[in-house]
View (tube, rainbow, N blue to C red):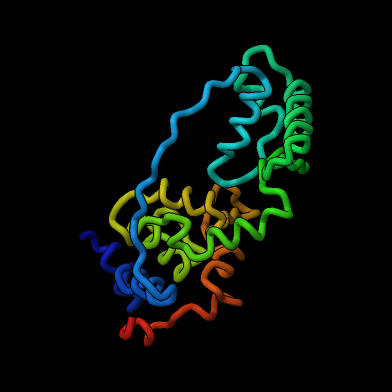
Length: 218
């Protein structure tokens, strides 16, 4: 263990194990890893509309919108205007079929989201973090972010003694963690918990997280 790593852990009585245990105690039961099953993909026609739909479904790791220009750049001889047209066709099809999804537009681009009337169904289904199928490793990373925020990736890696970029990206995609960038230095990225994090854990503010004295009983 490096001196920096040792110092990072000694700065606080909140160890990774105790942080994660406290989360589990707050949720009322231990977290468990849920094995994911993969369904065989159906055949689709590969065209501007289907590729646009796939790009929006996957989205960006930071959950930010995708611009028409960015999507067009992934396809040969396709213009941003054709992507905009594809989005309009997809939304028309979603509306006609009564699907749960829709594509919303902002100044930064497009995102595929649940329709507003379906959000209550999502919230009831997701419920607690366990139902969002977070692994124990992801819970550890979430614990570090919750108690160290705002925190950068290097600090998270140091505390867990391994690379955590993929797990942090997962938490951002799940809406439990937000990305913060300094106005003075946009390349400096730090992570904080999101309003959804508070909702999932039933907290009104981050101050309600279990404190050091409560970890002894966790």
